[in-house]
Length: 379
Image (cartoon, rainbow, N blue to C red):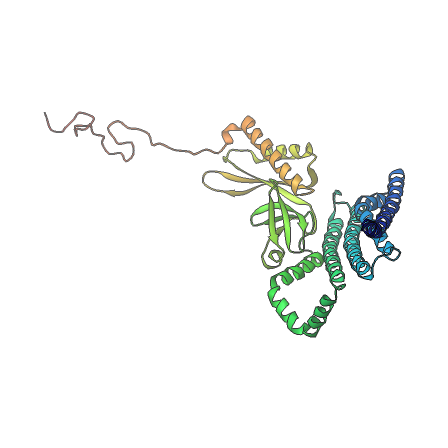
């Protein structure tokens, strides 16, 4: 009995050792390959090799192990049933790690695209357009790879194949049912394609959405993430940008006009204010030297409305320029023309003794007598 148990253990132990050695060999092979890629990328400072190593190293190692195990199945001595089950398991893992590697490969392409089209450039309209399209295509490719990998895994089982044949037979009915059940998802997917290629918004666009100022940070298959100025995130469905109006400050150019409104007394010298505004702009690197205007845009019975208009290269610089110019003009008026600050005037009629200051009527004492002491009823 002991000899039989030993023989049975040996029959399992030898194939197990062979599988472990095959998996180890596959791991070491891919490990060596990526060590070489890492060495070459660092030595040559090559972005493609560095990105390839960074993104594909982990899935490739797992894939190497599984490929080695799958190859070893043909050489180890096990029963046909066990070999078949192991083959299905290892092939399924190959689809899993192969799909993972393909998805990571899109990240390699993404690194190359972002290096070629940098968003840090001052006029990055073309870069934002291309990156927006590529980002959406990348997400679609990732979903397609996932679905195909799952399909290949399931198709290894006979019952799933029979089910697939039945589904193909009733594809018309199934398509109608799925279409009705997934109307919103399909609409969002189509809206995503429309946004990616018509591009009412792009990555890093400055937008006003739901009365919030922010930048487009991410565009997914179903929603858009807007990074608001105070670092909150506004998540908006894709359909929103096809159905509702919104402001895009960088649709065709990032240049903007920065405006400042001041409300002053009528005595403020507009020419002096205009000269000060020009001096403030000349000393400010945020001004792009396109527009420099000071105008009286309105006036009422109390104040004048003065608008100072300047130009900037982008929305962030326009905001900072507005704040700095506003502070400079207010300080200038406070120091040089304090009497020109907004004020409310009240004019009083001259006071005459014996008359009411408001309507000229005689003033009376608390006893009802004229304040002059003449006439009236004696005590």
